[in-house]
Length: 391
Image 1 (tube, rainbow, N blue to C red):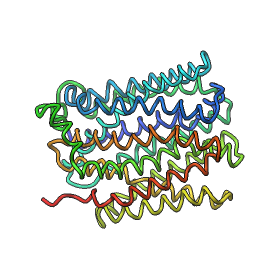
Image 2 (cartoon, one colour):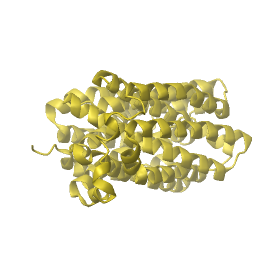
Image 3 (cartoon, rainbow, N blue to C red):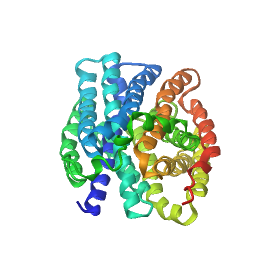
């Protein structure tokens, strides 16, 4: 298997995961309307996905150790797509918050395990190439979310229901999942079945990474930037609809602006990281995210809002992929450390939706996002942990 084909396969799966994720995120107002729920109940719906994600992350390093990264991607990416189609169809056929939460739990399990496996695969490709490339993989995720958000805006403006939209997207993406796994070497053995998954070292060794101070600090960096990114994914479209008076289709476009900015930041970030190092770039990123987020909260002006969302997106772009690279610096237990960092980061998705949703009932969504600004500031303090260890 050539390294070039393997890298292309990783690009594909990152983009697919992003498109599937954005499909339902950008249509959240329409999904809320189908389910006939309140803003606080939207937080509970998102909580179902977050609990599923944490459940998957708790098992991810062990599953990768047993199956290898490509088998894991093939199985759990397909599971996530089935859940996307299911939550869309059920929201119209059987509108129930409990059933929707269950569907999102399955999506969370599938997408979180896929997320760790594709980051493990990407980290190994990055090491083999001997240069920074992880932000480009995550840029393809952002490009996928921008495409998914754009399709969502078109579908919403044309009056296409989420039930039809979600099912079509799920069916269309199954083929590309199979193709991406084929490019990465397929599911029949291959070096990636064992090289990045420390199966031989056992469960105890994989769990021991939780006692490493550097791993925990990297996890805090990832959590802060995941919160910055996830709060926009979860609430930006809805906030612009509810707090600023835009239409559902216009709300989806604000989401596209954010994800497009993240995509650009990830493409441009690679040469900057290679030139200046991880820590200075992450410090600048966190400051940009803070300024952008604060501006969109306090300034009700569409032109200023565009620049604020761009700054929020650019600032949120590099924290998570750089944290994944830092977690995988030592290939011996890369899968376990990536899993631990991702688990800490996904804590933002567990706590964030119900916290912001609950606060939003009293303050409005935008005001509730000050919580996100505080978490970004915390991650800023932990950025030195991402520095590459000396050889």
